[in-house]
Image (cartoon, rainbow, N blue to C red; front, top):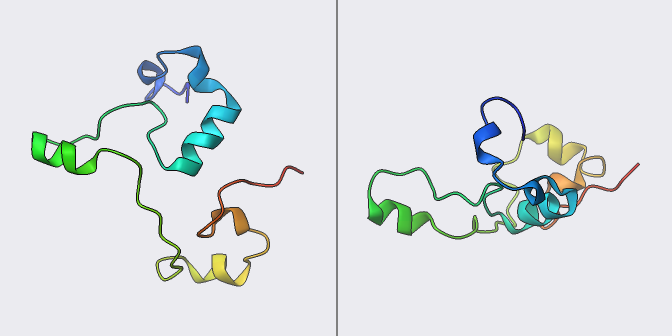
Amino acid sequence: MRAYSHNDRVRFSHYLNPERIQDVICRGTDLFDMLPEEYTFREIIGKLGPIPRSYSAVHLPSHLIEKAESYKYLLPGNCVRDSG
């Protein structure tokens, strides 16, 4: 998050808190609390809020589905990676 291209977006030190990052990822909201990048107010308002959840695996790569146990944190309904 401190990479050159994102450095200006880390406005507060709490943005780097690992627990906050995990929570933001699980909720599907923006890591930097930024508005969506759109060109009209109608488009911005339409994209406000978290990314809608999907429990479908249709859009997932076959390797991910075949190795589901190894990558269960990437599958629909999960978001926390086991430590270790």
